[in-house]
Length: 327
Length: 172
Image (cartoon, rainbow over all chains, first blue to last red; front, side, top):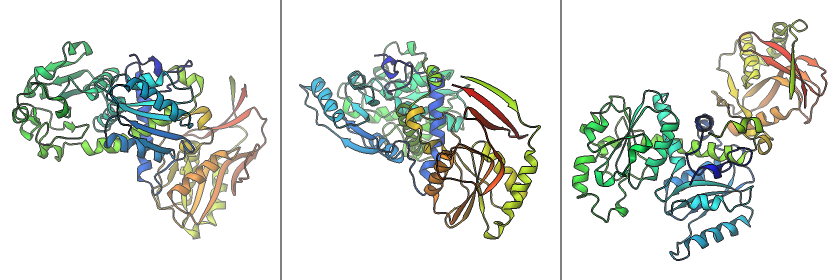
């Protein structure tokens, strides 16, 4: 599953499926565009007319409140019309119904699908089957990727830390099941962050994670030491049926982010979480609501970042500028 | 696409033009106007007019990229500056400033954007250069100078420290 499908024959970004394959320049261009969209939310009329007359379909096969809502708000602030669809999943006909659903919606002259699905590769599959004028954004596919989350995370990091050089970023928690972690690691690496650490119990640590250029840690103190950014992941209770963690209490004791554990990180370290949070499981309320937390800023930033991605993939583009986008 | 650039500085005195524009705008001062410049050249011109008129309120700036009518053809300008209107423009007399008035499309976009911030009492357009080639019924009330140019010629303002006009010939 490469990112090649994301570009058209002229090298223009048409779909936004994965961070892999994007150039540093493309990522920075998205961040800069998002920065200019930040002010739109503070206006009397929170709308710009860029996508007027376009129809955006939020196609969420997996439940989500935050991501779906921020995509909906982002599209509406660009003046698009938005339809939310949460199809039920019939386990036997997943592949077939997925494409059928998309084809019926395409027949209604829709322009952009924002897709979330529990199967890895779902957004890619759809992108390979839509006519050229239809665009796809991956809003999370299985344990594979969640590229817009990674973009809003690096956007938030840049806002607080100004640049990506000299940063030490620690990602903590369920690395094994986390598409957020995977996409974020790719984005940080393309942007040249020199040190990315992942902290998890061995049972939640993917094998050969070092191949992605990150440093694995099994203990919080060592992993958080000197960190500039601490990214807490949600412990996916629904996937914890096996004996991956001993008990929730013990997990919190060892890996829950408390004020005491946070002391190992730099004094000005920021604490992030993609939400929804399990308070008292992976993060202590004192930290979540504390002065180092930027969790609510992440949500606000997510709207501007998603506006930027929609505007960039749906706008036309001069060829000369487009060529530089490919990695 | 080839572009030839030739400086125009010998024939036009921008400082004198700005002084004359400021004099014409004096009459508006009793209505307590606020000033808004359009990125990028319009902000440079507006900064100078703002100073010459001694306006107390900060200058507003607009980047009309989100309001362009050619988005579906050429997409987003990757270097969008944030629009910033520091004062509430409801019921205010707005002096809108741009460097070059050509087709009128930029001003159409700027007016739309201004109305997304509020309802001004009036908008007066001041442009350093007013050239031929209008495609919309838009005119400037305060003009630095008029220019007649060939269709393939574009006039550009260079800045921001020293303002200079350049004419580019574009062969497509």
